[in-house]
Length: 481
Image (cartoon, rainbow, N blue to C red; front, side, top):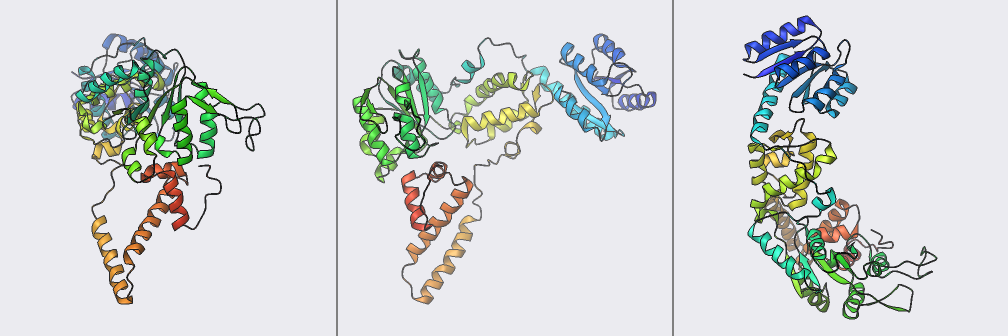
């Protein structure tokens, strides 16, 4: 029998609830104060408590705190005035499952109770989360997966950790390239020395150069009077992780290549050569081999990076790892949200397994974080998942259903107009127009951040700058994006 306790000091409301609950097949009990309600919870062990906020003596919110502290498995639904937003917000913060506004609509009560018992049903078959003694940083900086692809990657990490060879880590955005780099460093003899990550796509070339190699006093306007050591110096004896290396300019590629060959650096504005002992790990979400073929990335630097390469598969190609990743993220975020999460319902997990995950592991983590925050109990149900997961349509997957037909219509009109006007340069005209439009849209989408725009388009910053100057008739005076 499904047991529901009603805690309310209004006898008429209690009578109405009892009639309704008995008629719906629930076993109901009544308490007219918070103190009596707490006693009944201890003795009757109800599944769900309908708790009024305004009670004589102890308030409903105080009772909610005690219930959650002493009986965390009990689902509490708050009864409150329709316009009492502050109380509703506070109740949700204290992990109430839901709230029923006054005047009470029994259809709303029925819906909330059905959802509460669906949650209880899922909870009963999920394991209780046990405490993990690892700290949050250790858990977070860990690769997760038992698929064949991941087992091969673990082997490569073990091999790479035993030497100092430069490694190129390739994979789509969000696949965990930084975690591979950290794992290689953690398994190497350099593990007690610095691990220094650098996002090469987040800084313009001039700042990236000074960030990598440091600068001397007065090297440029705004330089510190005492100078500053670069990331290579800071990583001396350890490992430097160069993320998104495809975004480097040709000039910076030359300087980096020399450093890799000689293990020497010169600070910006300086003449002194400094020797460093640094292992270099590089990563990219672009296909460097294609950039080399197009002349957008130095072949000698590419082959220097690619002495050993590790390719991380997208999440959609290792779906068997998804349940492990979900459990990992739930364990990771429990401290952040201030409550334990037992797991996800079968229906919810089915939706997660069917989703294509174009944003890879990072998108999955964000999904679980969002769902856990929205869940009002210790179980995640389908309705807590983002809408794109429930509909099965990724926000990263463009709707191209009508694109081809629309494009054909436009191109047909342009072709006919060119023939009528006797023009014979239509190919260059159309390609230039498409190029210009795409760059404008990409710049707008990336808030004029050149590095992000180049990454989105799959081209180098240098190529992007040339195209902007060619099509938009503008220079890049600051290039600070």
